[in-house]
Length: 252
Image: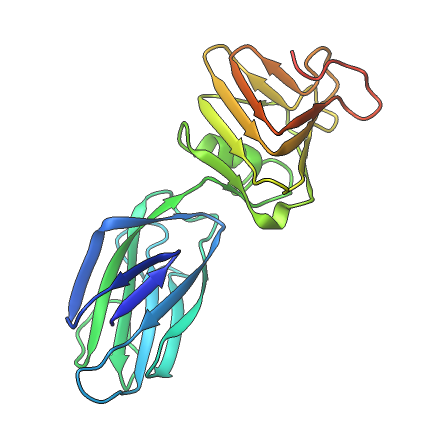
């Protein structure tokens, strides 16, 4: 294996039966899709190689769980490539990705010994900072779940599939419990609506909320139909409205 490129990180290596690149984690987000390419090199003439990749998604120390073989290709004597989607159920942890290449036959499994091949291990830092769902605000990938799962001060991002869509919040106000950042990209045109609940968002004393490039719509409360702020609130290129047909003050 002369090169592995995954999630925009390229690692070039020489000839070795095993290489460990666990010291430098590659950061990925649950629910996101990343491109992978694996390039073989040859000391003599080119040969037909087979490739497999595994990721320990549940961080239990093996690759035997369902869905943990994430890529298979070959026979090929040139670069092979594909896409890998990180499940929204993956454990938030720094876990292992194993890349295997074998001459003339597919690697039989993630562990074992075989001649004429190479194995490389990589560390993946799996984050839960990507909102992927428009469904009701409970469960992996929803706005409420991701907001509480992400670390303080970590940018909470929005999948491109949510562009020009509406996220409806229906299970009561989302309450900030630390230092939160909802950081949509410019031009994404994502709306977040409180529906029939009192308000969309509460920022308690001592907590912080930063919001970028979103449109927020309030609920039934007044004042503060959209945001009730007693902490720190930063709005950047964000519009905040009361509920449709209401004249209630949107932020207090």
